[in-house]
Length: 84
Image (cartoon, rainbow, N blue to C red; front, side, top):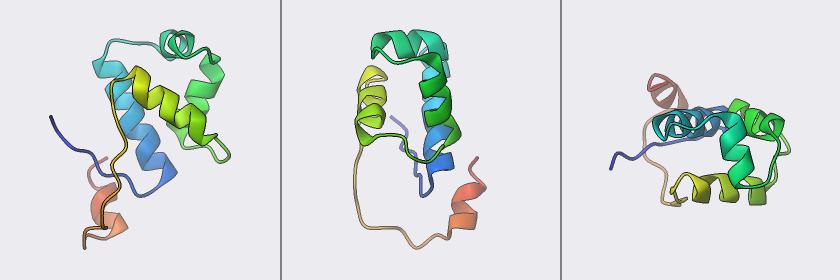
């Protein structure tokens, strides 16, 4: 499985959007799985501020993903942005 690196909320949202689409889910169907509105999923994927950690964790679980925390690599944020 491919690893994805996110250093900003927007990068994390883009990863979630990509993984949701790969799973063949709409924002609405993902929201239904975790009992959230489509608009909440949209805000999460947009990297909107103030999205609750619980919401993020539920979305990750519904997409069969997990969060891994590790020491930061030496690449700059601009290098990571190029991946998107």
